[in-house]
Length: 383
Image 1 (cartoon, rainbow, N blue to C red):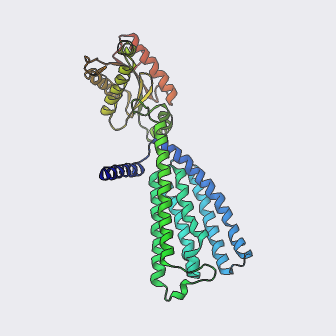
Image 2: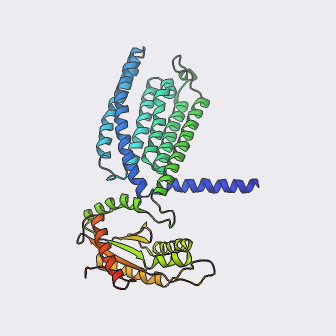
Image 3: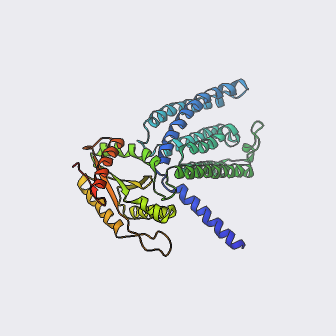
């Protein structure tokens, strides 16, 4: 019993790790891009507040050299905060930006700790306020909605701080240098606890991101067919059109509707209708090639985005139509197979429109033409 529980826990942990290390879907990436902008604005505010810390330190009786180190660090952070804000405003143009800004947040903390340690060793390793910069850097990754960034920031903080601790204990000539009336004693146990806390914060934030990923994934996924849904399409389409325009590529939208779907519901019930939808979605998912994205809109309607010119897209959709016709589904267990077919209307960018709503309207007109002229066909041009 205990072994089965351990195996289940290990599988669950492995699933979580895979989800965190996988590339987020389009809805998550778009959310993360907005989060990166929020982080950049928050960083700018925090950086401005950092300018007050040297003043507080000086008024509290801190040394001049320590105050100047803090002031230099605050100016450095403010300069880069402005740069990161300018880049974050150009959403998703720089895929490396979340990693670069996280590395900066962690690295800036390490740099200040190194400078403090060179001035006074206990100040570098026992300064709680500066050390909390690691915690803030890890916490801010939750707004980026990407588990990879969280794990990267946490691992980087642990490695950098761990190397700093090892360097101090290896290079300090005498134990007396590790003692301070203001900062206390620097001990291996105390530093080990700080590293453990960084690992704990990383795991907690990673689990928060994982839960966010699951919720957003569910919001962008059709519950019945497990295909992307209309919300996913609304997030994905603008990025796809931007890419097509930038690269001078082709894009075709296919609006697909299952033929006589109401007959299935009337004859076999809604459960059989659900089985038909899942079956059709499974065929679409199985046959989709790279550069093709099947989406369920609503009811028995699907959209297939194809990064292909209209003629090639027509051949692909017609081949899928024939494949669906060759794979009947069982309305219920043991029942006779029921053949499926669909009608489809196609519209291409830029000839038929330059955005998704226009292409869907034109594809819808051609879908109606296909239905009025016998169904089970794909129409790519106006009559």
